Amino acid sequence: MTAPSRAVAAAAALAVVVAGCTVDVGADAGGTGTTSSSASSTASSGTTGTQSTAPSGTSTSSGTSTGSGSDTGTDTAGSDGTGAQPTPSTADPTAVVGTEVVARNLAVPWDVVRLPDGSHLVSLRDEARIVHVERSGAVSAVPATGPDGRVPDVEPAGEGGLLGLAVDPEDSTAVYAYFTAAEDNRVVRMRYADGRLGEPTVVLRGLPKAVVHNGGRIAFGPDNQLYVATGDATERGGAQDRGYLGGKILRITRDGQPAQGNPFPGSPVWSYGHRNVQGIGWDGAGRLFASEFGQNAWDELNQVLPGRNYGWPVVEGPGTAEDSARGFTPPLASWRTDDASPSGLAVGRGAVWLAALRGERLWRVPLDADGRTGQPAALLQGRLGRLRDVEVEPDGSLLVLTNNTYRGSPAADDDRLVRLRLG
Image (cartoon, rainbow, N blue to C red):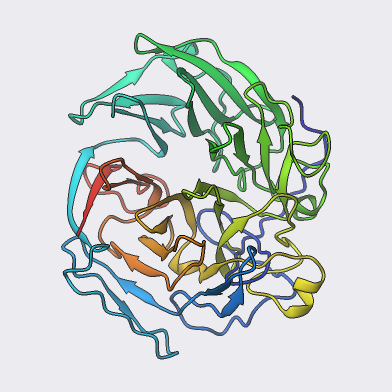
């Protein structure tokens, strides 16, 4: 399928929201810019939110906390000046009690996906390569059909390159990839067999590209449809245009067609009014959650419902009752951009987990069986640096992918794939 064409403007806005209003999401590094109808920008650092009504209609509390995490199970949350100061004990079953480096020396890794045998594939954004990580931690290149074994047609630049991966849940030899090409962002499918990747078949082309705000996360949902998270490609107004596929979450078939049951007939659009979604995941009840980068005020966690408008670029932050009355859906939680800039997201172990780039920490947002979220808490603050992705493993451990070889301060063995053991 080819996305409708539209001129891509050159704007660099970044922003995010929390607790109850549609928001914008920004580039990896955070940024500057202005948006209207935002919450107060005077709050101090940490997770800041208000009691609000979640999209599902349940009351949601987005608390105020800043985490001072460690990998020894002594993560504590500090106050942001509003009085909330939770302090988990070392017996907390959600505290990190140990870390294990699974793989080292990965060059600008972007996504990690699990294969049926328990090994993993990792995309390397700027090298346009995919590597295989054995359960033992051994790393090997997965040759593709492009020059020097690279995935063909990938043209890395800025935040673009080889981004998200997804393995077909019904056919583990079918690997999907989202990447930046010469003229667009696109989704392709490749056959993975005998340790090699076959020639790509384009599934979805014409997604807008830019130096920043390329989105890039893809995943199969519990309905076996492929969900594609796109950025606004710096064309802020495009996020509100349902004919423009930037600033959206798309839902398509394996062949790139609009999936049956989408809210807008004949369209792949599932939700709109997004700025730069880079994390999506589902809970056991099939609820979809997404992370969004903020501009210069708020980063955001949303519950994504079909046909909903999440507000960018009109609303940033929790918004107001008037914003909700205008049809903008509020976020479940939000953070100052210095504390988050969330990329990858995972759901499991009774929480939504968000990997923070600029915030250099892992955020845990409690999630109950009814989809209600609790007060966020930070783990690993100052321990691993920038975090690009997080996955929940079947044994209950977490995998986090660092991102210090891009806009970070890399250690000698960065970047790393690290396993976290929880208490």
